[in-house]
Each structure stands twice: as structure tokens, then as C-alpha cells.
Image 1 (cartoon, rainbow, N blue to C red):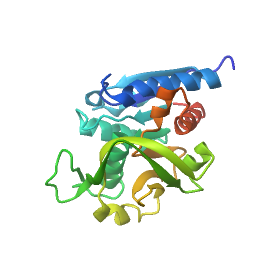
Image 2 (cartoon, rainbow, N blue to C red):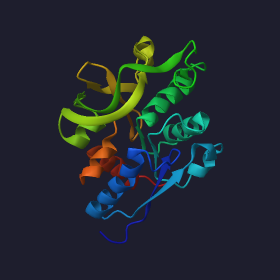
Image 3 (spheres, rainbow, N blue to C red):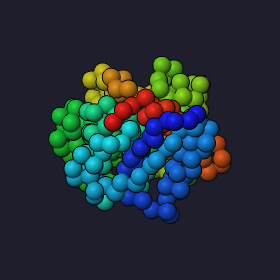
Image 4 (tube, rainbow, N blue to C red):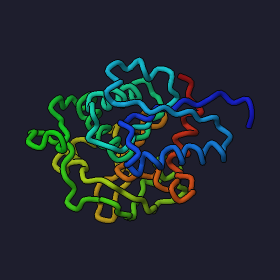
Length: 237
């Protein structure tokens, strides 16, 4: 495909080549570019650089990447809020999932005291708390909501994905968090625990505790990342 406009994707996170996902993400985008012909241009944005959301204006989509705790929790939350409110395609993986939950809790549910248990373990409303079994270098099955963007991306209802994560949504707050009708649970693991969400009133807003980008390390295109890129291609900044 020729004469396509470039796609500009913001990778929100504090780049560290020692983080497996940070090595996988550029590979995933390169594989997709080769297959689709999209001219994909990505830029790493350190969380501390997002005090002003205007830095995101020219991006077709926002991917909040693994690597929490971020240097600036507020920067990550600001980026997610921008993507949600401006209806830019958003993908959050691992730490991106956790901070998407924080953003939604604070700015949609009105839970100003919502906190991340990794940085504020004593908080009364610790929205993210240690998993009962840390998902570090683990692969597990996931059951998908058949009407979800994720299920459409994979073309099936059961998938297997990898993790490197120790924090998830606190079960104490999960029911209330999902009660507003906008945020939908779209993937649960073999134990029934929440592992992905979507906003249904948004063109593409998907957050997963698992790391789909890891497929690129084996030379495979991650279906969810491909769906995110296609959503970016439909978006004009």
C-alpha cells in the first residue's frame, strides 16, 4: 500500500532495554508495518514529560506500556485521560492496565483517593493490590467476552498469553468499578480473575494485565496490537 499517511504512536513509559516488553514492542510494530504497509512511527514518551497533555496532540494513538512503577504516575494518568477524553485509540498493557484503572476510578468514578498499592500500600482505597499469585514469567489461558474488541482481534474466545506482573485490581473494589456500565470486563483467567477491560463508548480503549506484545519476540504478530494499529489508521489527530 502506497501513499499512506504516517501513523504516529506514543509509547508512554520510561524506556528500559532490560524490560522484555520494551524490546518486544518495537518488534511488534515493525512486524505489523511490514505486513500491512502502514508507515508506523513510534516515539517513547517518558512519563515525566507529560505534565502538559498537549504533547500528545499529534499522535494517532497512545500505548501505555509495561514498566511500573513509572517515574511519574501523574504523567501516565494524564496520558490515559487524554486518550479517553479525546477518543484516541488506547492500548494499555500490564502497568498500562493498572494505570488505566486508576484514571477511570479517579476521573470517571470520582474516587479521588484511588491509589496504586505498589506506591501507596497503606492507602484506604488501594485500587491495585498484590495478586494472590504473582504472574511473573507466566502463561495462562483467558476466556474472552465474545462481543469484545479483543475477541474480534484474536478471532476466538480462548487465548493463552504471558505475564510479568504482581499487581491487579483489588477484588474489594472490582464490582463497583464495573458497575457504571461504561467499563466492561472482557477477559478473565483460568481462576476467573479480571485480566482485561474495554470502554464500550470509545472507538478503541483496551487495557490488559497480560502482555500481548511478547508474541513479537517469537516472530509472531500480536493480534491485539494489530487491531490497535488499525484503529490508529482510522484516526486523524
